[in-house]
Image 1 (cartoon, rainbow, N blue to C red):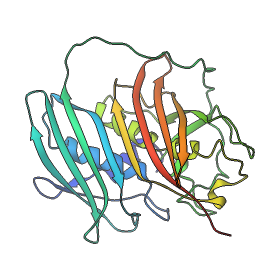
Image 2 (tube, one colour):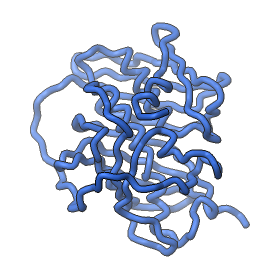
Image 3 (tube, rainbow, N blue to C red):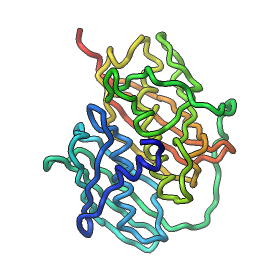
Image 4 (tube, rainbow, N blue to C red):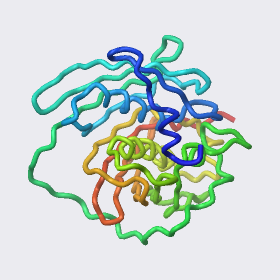
Length: 279
């Protein structure tokens, strides 16, 4: 893959029936990157609603590890179509078993009162992405491309991971590789995929660990996104993440995606497994 557009073309779910779809995964990876299947479910559900509706929230659960070597089947359930809101439930399956489940709510555009936090005062991004070629994450093996490179995403770290305990805040700039067409659906798919970077790793910032992926068994348990404004995801966006709490083998993360001019594009939340490994 040379840019993010080719990534979307490869993973985009293909219609097999009125409410059924099938999609592929990128290789190599040992299990399917969660951001991919979230984006695929949204792309499938988008094909079952009218053009006046746009997704405003998504709530999902990761149920089983996905196998990237076989296709994913997507079943869309049109739970409700109202005058202002519509809801879709999407189940992703492999070998007849659900690996992912999400509900997506759609809303027509309408006016209303508004308020918003201020964007954190962070230095503007540089032109070049960080070199992350040596980074190995949860679903990659030594010698394989990391998930940033595989999915044609660029990252600049604002917060760097330290071996000692550090404040529970993680910030990075993200953008897609290559220019994206003027298509809201593609930019939204890119935002969804980017939203699954950083969140899980933020829960390890307050822990003193030289390598949390060796010290902890980790996995995303659920994922939520609230879409606020359209953004250009081929331009740098700030992902401002924090972790309010960890305990009982789970960690909670929140995130806010900001455009460079201070517009809050989306808010996210995720709970993850962070179980200490037995020695």
